[in-house]
Length: 362
Image 1 (cartoon, rainbow, N blue to C red):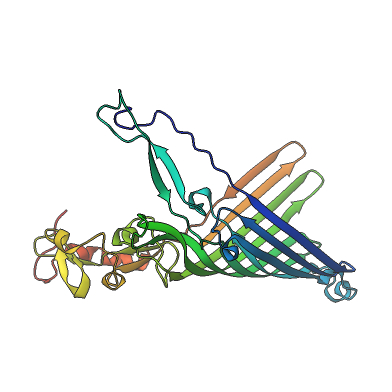
Image 2: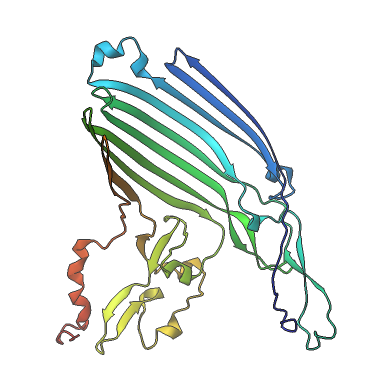
């Protein structure tokens, strides 16, 4: 193990320092109108030494109008609408990332190089694990949220509606460099994305007596995002793998595929490459370069959709009595599926493209 420089165990110590200042203020008028503001100024040595990178002010402004506490509300809606609150918020938040991105200073670690005679003599070497990254800064997000809380029939039915839009920028990722300093890749603020969505929550008390109660909770959510900036190159294999990958103009984890052109006269699958060129399974390896990263040479890939579901939700029921409680729930609703309208195309994929032969047997 010593000759092969195989560690028996490893122990790595990390040290971080952070400092933050926090202030908040709230104003409320008769419990009807509420305005809240939060300000935070923080710094951490996880990020670059540049003062503009290491220190960042963040803030949040929110307000709410409890319309149901207005004097005219009860006379206007009676018991049909028992509660109404309108709310909105706008904020700038940030994330410093994790320890694996911490390289404000050069990271150097000691090791024992491989030597044939390591059992008798050994020496220590120093490796540059990561170069200093002076300008690496926080991941930031602007978010606008508008919502409403409603209660009907003496709050037996409660409905919550929320709409949001987000603008994420200075997102941290790996970027390819020219290798100056001996490091081909390093972390940088390389990406930006926008997202929006709607969240709906419905809670009802269906039956409520002295000895029995039945409640239902339904949650529905829709969210979509688009990558607007990506200052790095991505290989073809990342795009067509099952996990998806980021690409400008598409969702953050978009899935692509090599266009399928059917079967040739020998029953071999064919694919459409760059310049509309068709290749089959016997010669595709010479035409297909999975390490290709030039954007203009990847335009032929077909977009299949996001790997993350855009629609999710749950439905739950609770039945409770004086001596029992029964829970029933249904979880996430995925949205990534094969459209039923495309199923009729499967039989045609088993026919030769020239149309004069018979269907291939399976």
